[in-house]
Length: 415
Image (cartoon, rainbow, N blue to C red; front, top):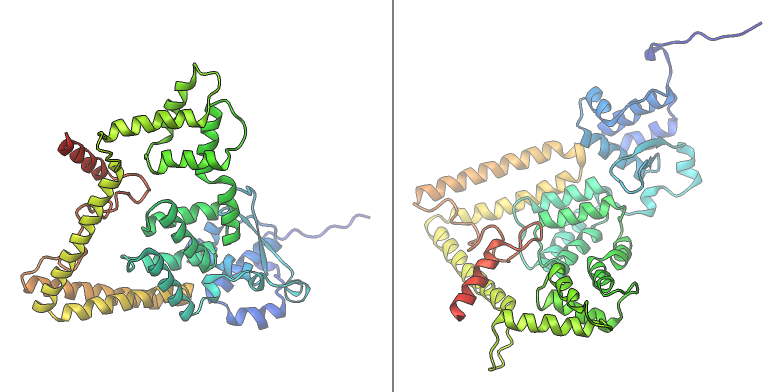
């Protein structure tokens, strides 16, 4: 005799087992949308029915971003595990539901092992992070910068010290603190699975771009070894002080084709001679580099523009005193919005409310400026070049066209 069981194709006729511990211990403190995502995906997992974050979002009337935040939440509690088909791509993953009893009693929850800024960052910690970043950059926040920082905390599930480290790295190695550039660097780190400062430091030590430049130069000279400390020091002067790119250095390396013993010192002599010729140095011993002279121009422009900005603000405050208060209220509203964004879906109403407040303040400021015969941008920072904000670097780290314009002007004046 053979036995068989009726195959039920209507999902509504099945049951999905949910641990009471989930209901009593986890569900009560979780955002409602996160619970819905968990339960619906659990049902499909029990039925072995394929589903995607996109399909879950459509069924629940949520955004894909909210679904992804839900998995971050449950992963921190140890109820799900993210599995990465491609270990190199940390933004594409599947979700495995874990045994709740094991998560609670059998091992330490993920949240206890990794401090996640999006879940545990208090108001004081967030405020301290903002103060630390402003101290590193030497400026106040720009535009939506505070909100972007919160988005990094929640979307990437990283600790605040990683963000602070990224600002320091961009200031030191890329000479920029623009938040869009910092965000691009941070995204690249996350995609490579770097989620702690230790991870990033190890990665930079092993794969830093400068290391590859050194290796490329040695390879052009016929060496497969790493550079010595003295060789690294000499090569760094080519890129940092002489401002040569790798193609220019490799051009100098090709000068060794007829030399039996090519070495770094010979390349250094070639590049030093080229650099002196390009700077137009004379016998007077003038060794100031063109790069330094251009950067001095930027420094003077920034100083003058800071004075102009302050003068504009003083004029605005004299004619329309209320504007001073509006600027303060805008900053406070922006800060409150960033805190609300940390709450995920539970903070959506607060985010919307703060945005409405900011929109109203901006409209009031625009009206006051117009009524008093002031320019709409009277309260904005003055820049000679708005593209690079008088730094010489664009947001993607490339040199701004105005840098070459300044250099050409200096060369013309010297000729």
